Length: 287
Image (spheres, rainbow, N blue to C red):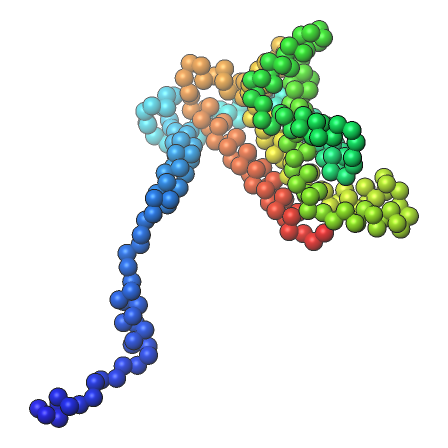
């Protein structure tokens, strides 16, 4: 017994000591209020979209009761002439407004970033007002302006109204890209004999292409989704897709509207993701 009491303590290998330390320090995951709040916000934003997609496959004509799985509403949607007519109007408005805004917005961003002129600060503030003014104010102001000039409402008045806010969004994105560029590139091109127009087209414009495309995609999504401004400035027969959807849900949400909404959500999400990808790739690319 004396030898056992006086024997040295048993030695453990470093691996065994590490396993013991990890087992002793292992604790239960701690859920902070920030994590709970984040999960709750994501559920609040995206759970209704999930419910919408779920009921788009409902066999019942009314979304309140589930009667079985079906793809009938997506098939009917593909054969709906009114939907395709409204979609054509929306695409016409969005593509035309974005094309005009891309040219004007890029030139506006370059002019405000590279040049100085009297009233620049005032013009800079006014050019970005459509970003903060409520849509209802833009819609009413545009309608009053068109009525004062006696211009009849057509699909092209919707285009003119959409150019107002598309122009501001594209200019903001292009200005962000311009802030990351080296202004010495243009000066070097001018020193080598290029004209200002050549320096802009061959040096500056290729660097702005990712920002321009990103801004155009963002403006395109906003134009396609707009209802308020289009409803105030549309003429007879100029029904856009959001206006057609609103006219159908007055008597209740039908599964075909759910199916159409799901397709629009996926299309808008894809374009928004593509716009963000182009913007990030443009910021990471070397100047």
